[in-house]
Image (cartoon, rainbow, N blue to C red; front, side, top):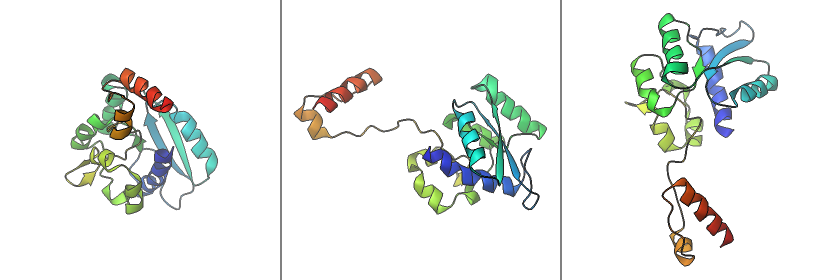
Length: 175
């Protein structure tokens, strides 16, 4: 939830900068932002956000995931000039969307305060040649840290699969 909240000021800044399909300019009343995502639960987050304030309204569209679903729709919409203001894409897709001009350079919109709240490893997945094209929103486990002394004292093997991780977690909890 913190990452989503960190993204909302960026949504406002993006909308005020102009360029999106449904974006109002500053001084024209309530700003409307279009947001496409395949992530489950996005509608509930958008609904809560829209209830929380009056300056910005997010119009959400659930799109299918993957290359033949939302990604194809996003690419086509960008080529046609009617892409959403904000969309979620997976890390491996960011370079392609950046090269194709679909993803906007967000570097000037990311202040130090927001950068400090993001994992540097995740931010690095969205930054190329010093320019940031996406804000990390959903970060999967990338690193496993554990206490070597605790594992050794209780003869717990370092897990290499999710099933082993579950067993190790139960053993650590019992210990």
